Length: 241
Ligand code: SF4
Image 1 (cartoon, rainbow, N blue to C red):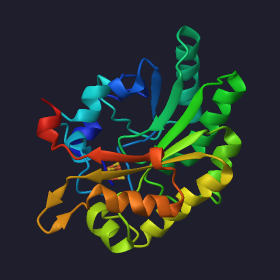
Image 2: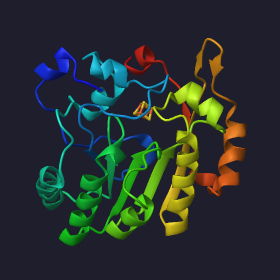
Image 3: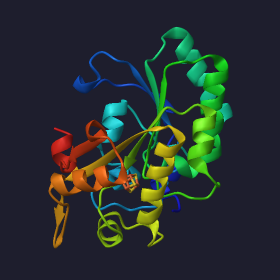
Image 4: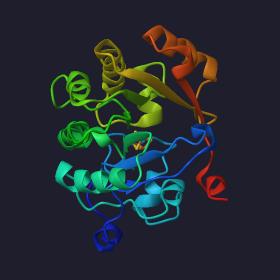
């Protein structure tokens, strides 16, 4: 996706940020913004990325405490010095590679950064949030595991290709098959898999399913029950209140 005039004028945003949620129960998570230009291969109907791209207030940048717009995808050379400095000051319990967009579009840098963190001696949990639909660099789960990834949270959001295409509008109409394959390959490599599903979204005739359908599907894919995550859709305006 090309840059808007607004994006071209923006100062580069944060690569690292932290915030805590009640679910974390005192655990400290360091987030690594791994995506340039808010890039993604999907255009999910429920995604708040559009607001960020238009420079409007959005929940992601509100939580991060600042702009997350990066004019280009960060390299490991950009991420690692910042992360090491942060670890030296205060050791996070967990480091999560995320984006306002899709981190695996920047797969080589994500993999190199994970490897670099392990070489530096970071022994906490390393995780990744992804849509699981990118397939450009061979056996990505095996490479991520080899680099030192512990867990992955995959936005599955559907139970079949037709529903996925309607809700998530991927560029490639076979994307859902790749999401399921990626999930199963991660599990096979020994990466702990979490599967998340947005519920409560409705736009005209397109609606998310009741959570029990998603839970049954995720169990069929082999995801452990406690790792099946329900994400209640909250309209962007309510999220910001
Ligand atoms: S996969 Fe994630 S970042 Fe991409 S459009 Fe969907 S919700 Fe937004």
